[in-house]
Image 1 (tube, each protein chain N blue to C red):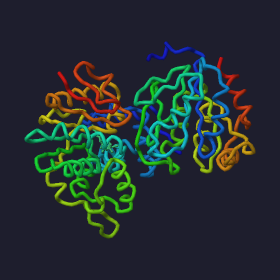
Image 2: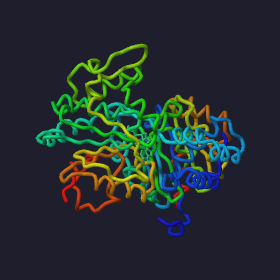
Image 3: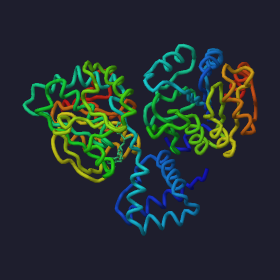
Image 4: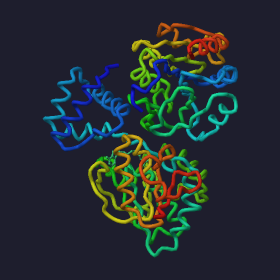
Length: 271
Length: 194
Ligand SMILES: C[S@@+](CC[C@H](N)C(=O)[O-])C[C@H]1O[C@@H](n2cnc3c(N)ncnc32)[C@H](O)[C@@H]1O
């Protein structure tokens, strides 16, 4: 396996910032290095200078590189027990509001967004919800908009759905066709997709429930802090922030402002 | 944590295994006194839905503290860390662990290769890697990386392994420093925890 050097990775980060203004400087190095290595190898480069000059001179290639080095792996109802808590504890608390605003930051191809839309629908809340779903990667947002996922994943997803407390026939939510599952338009009607960069963009609305799952793991502590503060600015009083099962706000924001929902990675803004 | 605060004896032991390895660990870990200078990291193939069962099981059997692995937890001597299910476990240069949800490697997440390779880059000669029982080729490339960076590699004696495929695959494709049975692995760990 080819291995790029640490110093080469740093020069890539610098050049990308200089030429395109995108700052990978606060991304966790271990994962970033693996990802850069991977695309360097996949695209058949043998000299780092060559790779660097391609990134510099070819903006299409640069975009492709960014799409490839961000990790977009996602699932519907990943961690079923997390969705059980959203279903049984969080949504009932939001249900009394006249209008519910949700934000999925780093939504990738949208599996998480459709999962939550299903919960909202089953709670009878979808009609009064507005779901913003954002990512830096334009390509994944295209897929998310379409609501088309591989059919072969549906067995696992319907099991996850059931484990999360779902009682319906999961296959009612999509139409199967030539290896793909197209999720019902009813679910996507209330979704708004747009590009948003947690490194540099600001708050754009106020939300009752923000999901940012398995995105912060790619950031160092400083950038995690920035993102958490951005969520803090974007949360309504008594709103909820939901992170991935191995992520925490502990190192990023004053603990007195938030109350954790039991042992879940869900925090309620109380100040 | 700053580099200069770290005990010069600090070493990392990383243990990887698949089918049959839990059994081997359950024979080794209970006999281990409280570890001192060593940080022990365990990467086992496990079900993606297994939340905490493995952690609970191991906690019951060890005298040392098991630190729950979350993103960016410091890696400290005297503690045992277990790679969580459905994430790859990586090592950062500033002595913290980080997690990654990228594609499975060798059909596995956590993958032993991914963690071994990442640990090798950071801990070089201060790393020892042990590969236990399993019926998958994961771990071999990782052992190679550890060896290349100057670390020590140990493979469970296939004769003592419930599933000899994984150790055999490693023995055929690397040059292990030691091939050891379960009791010898315990002795080895005791000998490096000074
Ligand atoms: C592993 S996916 C998480 C998907 C989903 N939330 C889940 O937990 O399954 C991480 C996503 O974060 C996005 N991402 C990475 N850096 C970002 C940034 N600076 N701003 C916004 N999104 C980012 C990636 O493009 C990717 O789609």
